[in-house]
Image (cartoon, rainbow, N blue to C red):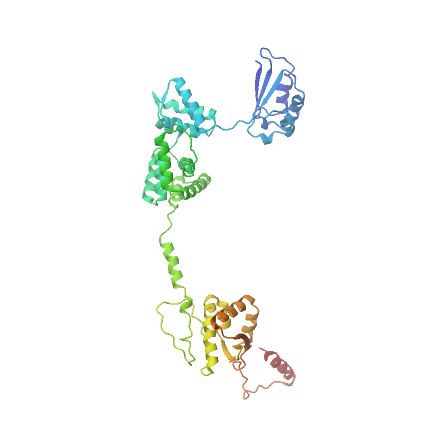
Length: 446
């Protein structure tokens, strides 16, 4: 009579607090030394109810003790917490839950398989009450002895051997084995969510085993050896990838209309990348023109019509060619060969360099400089506007020239500019003569 319990989940109003607590605290205990009020799920009380409770907790009678139970302490107001002693209940280990369940079965005179109790201990997730509830469910179908099959059937679980076989089949890329195992598990009455949860639970144990962390449980040598053997076969990297796959699957399986078909596709997608994909990449790399395929100083000879040897391999883009003058001094010819060697690599790597440098040629050589002429002033101006590109050109030139004291000088080739035809006179009206003169002055600079 002196122990009273209030469920705040269903009685959370201020009237409930006043009726069950405030109005009764004046009465002394009947038998015990104290009157005990247990408020379960206290975080569900309303704000007004907390205010009504606070006055009582601030000045409690000597014969009253309150026990406030909650799983969400952060929802309890600080004014209530500051007037309480806090006792944190932690989750039990799998070994402790197993020991307690085994003790209960021994006291009840029930024979059991260690693997069955270990499975229940893992499903309890650190809760003694949950473990006892699961044990009671499993005992319903047990006759003379609690077996692992009783536990699996009653709790809707999947044998660890089937889960291991499915994980190994996925890691070894065996689609026929994956489909066969899914069919076998489905025939036993398990759904897609149960399969993914069983896989994730098993992978969690394998993760601990692969990193040398104690898994816990009954300590059965056979079970521990099987777990470690499968973890070693898969490898830590594959285990982590499979965990991510199963975690994403549990999140997505609730939104699909055909869970089994979706599960088959989801599991088959793991690691079944077509083998032809890497070969395709290699073929693309091999087909890409290499710098060696670009014109070298030997074939680039001053000719009116250069001949190119036929290449059986089609190139994606024709390589630009630098034409040299047919006649020149030995120094000019040597400078031309060095210029071709210097810019060939850049032209193969950069389309911008190819468009700007393909109509260039050395036009003059002095003791310390080589003049490179551009057919168009626009190309030379664009090169000067790109500091990184012009720095790359000068760097390639310095490497190709060796110990020759030649620096690059850029200029516009006046000889390549189109010359006006003197015989093609254009008659303009008097009022347009001045406009024509201005136009000539403007376009002479380009």
